[in-house]
Length: 347
Figure 1 (cartoon, rainbow, N blue to C red):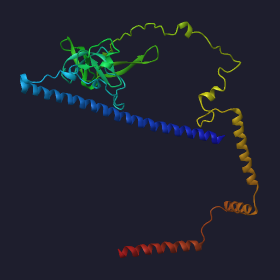
Figure 2 (figure 1 turned 120 degrees about the horizontal axis):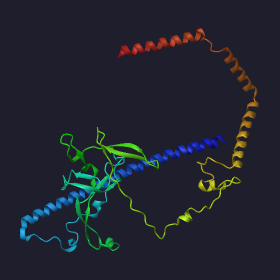
Figure 3 (figure 1 turned 90 degrees about the vertical axis):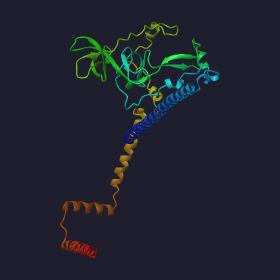
Figure 4 (figure 1 turned 135 degrees about the vertical axis):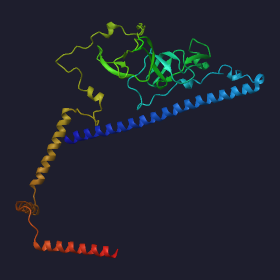
């Protein structure tokens, strides 16, 4: 039985190491894929900018003879961006912020792009990609393919959308009172500190933002969750609260065979076994011990002599070396030193 316990523990450790290795490989693969997707989006954006500059210069050089570009296949797609630019990959988990510095309803200022310096309200915060959407800022025209328009009510091929902005390209704007003039004015905050301030009724931690080095709080905007509407497919409350199981002390709540359904009966990871199987393993262990005892009792005359000699040597203890052995050791050491000196003299 002890071998079974050791085998189960070893199998669990091996499975844990294997799962950890697989998780690390998956994490590295996801990071490579995200970097590759982000690089493709950046290359696509740069190519769009370069092409637009070339077309602008060509229009300036040709003047009235400049060709029309919003014809043919570009009739609906001209001056629009690729839909792949709005599908940003997930952020790097190693640099991802645990607590979001922004929330829906915050006022932020743009630090990069054509809307640099403008202030807008956050309409969406994507925690997975660590980006925000700002109302009315970083707007672009998006071309919607025909197959996507068939399932939607809006048949317009061009739609104006607000592109996502990395949180590193925006800063929080808050109205603070000036200590000298006493007037309230907008202040751009380069850094925000988030601290735990309590626990709600459900046991979840509550956090509040602070201005670094001060006690000025920056509460998150209140977001009201819209009320849920009942649907025809919803389960009735009376059915979900109906008691279908009555516990009793006369029998266990579940049959013992449910363990075989949850875990294979012959699995290496199984901790609980049938009493008959455990009794069988214990009887096998007892038979092995009896066999070892019988083997110890069956001692030949030679084994008996060796056992007696070992007992006598243990009784005598450690004996000093005889003079002959000490002399031999001295001769060997002297010869070794002489050979070493001769080698040094030749070199």
